Image (tube, rainbow, N blue to C red):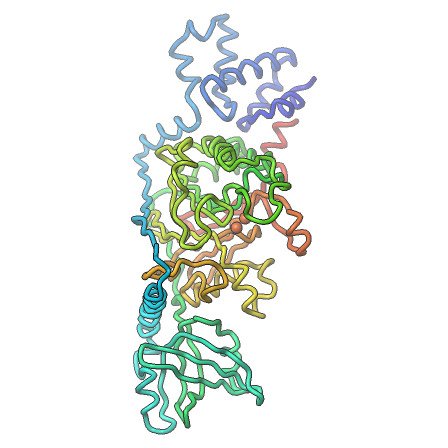
Length: 513
Ligand SMILES: [Fe+2]
Ligand SMILES: [Fe+2]
């Protein structure tokens, strides 16, 4: 059996250059050294067999000594890549900068008062954003004032959208409501405002420009709270620091692409090509946007799609993978609709009973959604469960399953992650936790299983795709996932690289030659 077959059969991860080094030896000696190095790596809990380990085993053989007779050398060889990185961090003075906001519960009793407070809170937040827009600095009036103003006087009113319909004449009629009353608005066919009126979703909070006449507000323009157009912000840091984005692992599913995920973990541990290792060295953060396991009972007959049918075992398996992420990387995890938390959003962080096995100081559990701050940049993490409902709201989003970034743009325009109430379970807590209050520098989501990225008004939108292959459901719906792509974003340079673990990397190819 040649070395390549041994590496493949034993599922070994080798640091770049290890196979070349072994290939320079006699085959029998190379095999002996490799197996000895595997043992040493296991003893020291190394995920990857490094050149240092090979060198150590070689020197041990050359000296004819056992490891126990050379304690200093053993210690050197037992240093894991993580520990080496930690030592190098300490030497270079690198300090992680990760701020997770205090967790808010967003609970309610489901009373009428809760619903009223929820919508009032949303209206207050979004109408303030609209009033602060430069274009709205003059002429915002309440609905009550607009109704009592002189005939056809132009003004801007701000309200929440309801009751949208097409009239017999082909005009679009809708209502908007503020604290003072309800206004019936009409966007006339063939007028520029018609196109914008067609984009309105129920419960949107918008500014409507127009004039009041004979009981109706004749619409000339519509504005959404939006995020302002601005330059992409970069982290003010001296060295390259990157975030690796993951989502939708679906551990426990028969479609979970375990071998490719292992490859990705190998990459994080420095088992890639020289170029890949250059990228991996910059990664200090890993953000995972939900659906980390496949769960149980998420949809009818799900058990037929599972290889691990116990949710605790699914999380336990997940933990085994997460422990392979180098300790110098801060790992942040939010739940998704397949995870073991309530379905209604905002979702709390994963409960400790599921994750205590892998609770370690570099792994952080956050709610869904959550706005993080990393080296001064605002990173919004949201699983993306509202995606399906939003797509069904809009003709404009007809191709959104291939272009999920388009839905993220609509969320940013509306400054809300699930504008239409009732289509997806949302907790009607007195405070609306789905409002996008701060402007994110990066908006990371998942759920769609389709990798995508887009720069919208200076916000970098990233959908990290999935680590689950095409499911029967996706096949029946004609949706093509794009699994096993890992976006890595450099916070200092603003460069986004998408690493593909579907194909063998150069380093991995070399490992098999
Ligand atoms: Fe998913
Ligand atoms: Fe999902």
